[in-house]
Length: 248
Image (cartoon, rainbow, N blue to C red):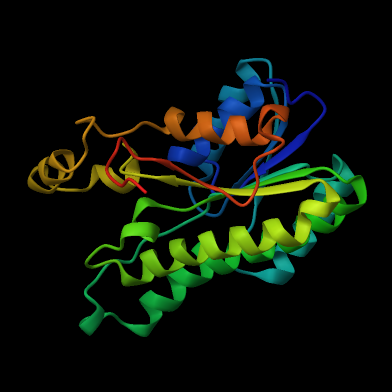
């Protein structure tokens, strides 16, 4: 599966799943744009890892929730490197809490980054894809977007929204040669799960038939398939990568 000659933008690409996706697509020959907001050190590490392996990559600092900022950055990327062919909407945050006591700010912040951010970036990228009549858009959802989870009403709502967004965008863009799909990870061993207590981790593992947490490379593999010509006839789908934790 080669992505030579393609430009891939991965939002939230400096760490965790995003970093794994950046590395995998770069290995396949794509020119990778690594988006980040904070943690420039992690972004630089991702950039160095790609270049050290002979790949081509660039950093792009911007907030996916800011529509004007997104538009300006995509214009600059187009001017400097060319139009984005592959967009992976991965940027996400959590602000967990029980619904009865959740602050409005926690709801808004999570929806703005996790859902509105995907809308902003997809809107910025899709017109050029439509002109080329080729594009790949992959939205990183979550197992909790399908199953729900106590204490994560905001996060689950955003990730469920991404699934609906994926299917609607897929119907709109299919006639222009653009596929839109979602990958829904289960519990992946990243910074987001590293803060969980051992008791919580044990409970999670008891609910996963394969008995282990996933790794970033597991999600990157699914993204790689959907980004490539091997995935050309797949659109509007949700690929669950969760060790059997949730089965449709």
